[in-house]
Length: 404
Image 1 (cartoon, rainbow, N blue to C red):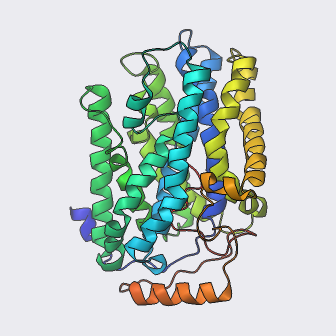
Image 2: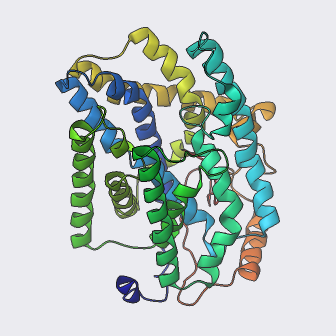
């Protein structure tokens, strides 16, 4: 605990959160790339040819994306300035998370049963749902739902806890999550389910707030880049040369040591590099949740027609060109879908107010008054400075599930 004693008790001055929108826009493309290459990494291993090593390297380089999404959600949700009463907070989350979770679970259960695995009688939709991961990307909604339930309690850390307590709590949760994943994968002891899937990710969620206002020095930027690149290389080499079945899947897990270091480094680097500019990514970000929800419905049929790549050129196509194509298609569908009143809710847009529309002057005054009354600033915590985040939003929803 000695390192924690050197941490100041007060939080650093608040910084703008505008960088989070382009960060999430970039990260959703990385998520699509993971899903585009995942089967290639798992099935093309036998010969350990250059095509597999390239797919392995790109896959390893994208693994930071999901933890960064969770860290950004925590950074916004645990901000005491943005807080609201637990009942009000949770009721909003039903619209933003609960309805999409139920609807898209049903969609992907049907998609898997009648398109992907029509003859697989061993697969049970009910058991798949109870695992908290009924389809490749939907586990993120189950993770986010669990973290949402605990957010009013976690927020007490940012309201009343010292900086040291926040650091210590985040690191302890992260350490427990890493140990849980190691034990469950390596020794086949225990397995995540619908009730517990979110818990290993709680460390990322808390550390998103803890690291949110850290501004890197030039030397720290270099160190963060070295850490990011080095951890990606370790993940790729570990997957290829690690003991056990090939590829060794543990290094790809979001709580493996290499991915944890890459995720924390990427989070800090995004804050450093995306503070200004990137107007197009600000525009695209409101549709990234739709990309997350829709992309397997496009990706799997297209990839089944194209077949898995077996050459370096094919891997490059599936790693860069196709993910962008899937993203554009899904963003266009989302843009149309959220304009339809009866459809908006399943894209997380069915609440009392569209989170991407600019609030009225009255709503802004009420929000500021509520935040000041319910969550006084802790010692040493300046008011949050928020720059406009997109042409459609002046302030993001704290737990907006814009991406996995």
